[in-house]
Figure (spheres, rainbow, N blue to C red):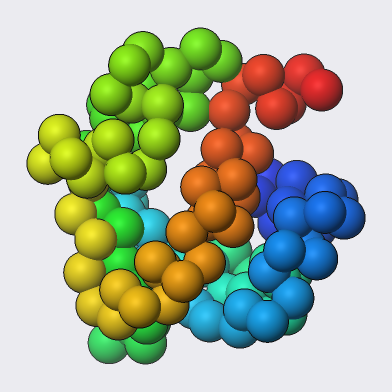
Length: 122
């Protein structure tokens, strides 16, 4: 499912434009599975599945698989509908260079929400 992120983000012209000044690589951990997602000027250029040996990333978002499944459901319940809500509930851990994450928070919220089941149908 995470592999679809590249096509869904790059297919959204407004989202790519929003991230046009963003170039980074971040780690997304879904339970025990790690994903390295590379972004260049707002476009997702690669989505690679781990395990990795000494991966290089600017920041990491880590949460149990069950929490990501709730976030990616077509109608997420309150507290699971937003990355900051997940952080507030202490089920999502954000670590590393959080300046990049916070400066581009709306981009990351919208990009990761592209994996919702409703997004697949649209």
